[in-house]
Length: 304
Image 1 (spheres, rainbow, N blue to C red):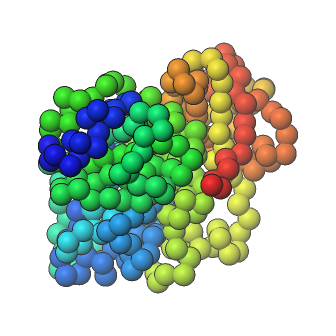
Image 2 (tube, rainbow, N blue to C red):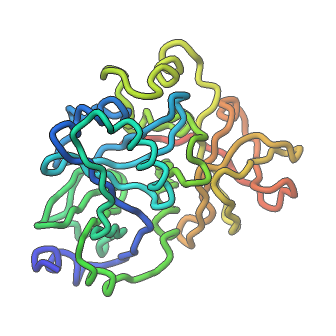
Image 3 (tube, one colour):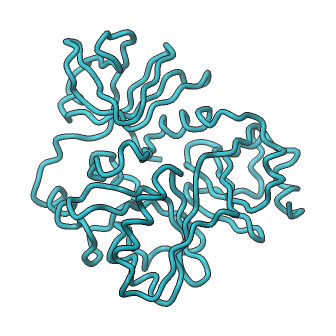
């Protein structure tokens, strides 16, 4: 580990958890041109000092990739949930044949969730999705609201400093902030607006054409959004698989689970897609038709 990163975190670790993410680089003289026609985010505004959410979609506007992206030398680097990498590369490769660029899995990189000891953030990013470079490492802040950071590093010795092996400790906090995730089980299922990703800057409605744009733009300019993602919470421990159904008081299916986690700090936290009518009432929802645990439904505030 380089001494600068070591001096920042070694004696300042509250939690350090290895995360099940993978990294893919897209590099070459046509990388930006190629990705502008595929990704929902505007690559012309992507810098090496920030992370940006983005998606890549089928012609029907359904996501098969949800990622964070930054600019690197000669191209771009994306971080995404590991189970979604195979389909993403396979689909992107179909469109790449006319562009001079390379798609590569960066197996040397690992992702870690990091939080410092209380009230000691000196030397770390101050704003959400701000990105700092320390030699070959990247450090970003997950949100303005909490002291949650993410480290991308090629240094395997970081694993020796991990404090816990359960990523749900971090994922529950991220879900509480309204940050969605895509898994292999939910690839090609969701339109990005159903996951509130327009609130997280994952899409530009001013850039040129990209695959799936017609559906996504129609939802923005011509349609009325009838579904969106809500925060479901309970103090009782109960989680469910992404893509599973959500049930109402009558044990009828009423929504779909985006992600679901438990930690002692947060309790049970699930992000689920429900009809927008749920914002107008105090109805409870359930993760099973047996209605074992009642979950409160609340809107997600993405303000600072």
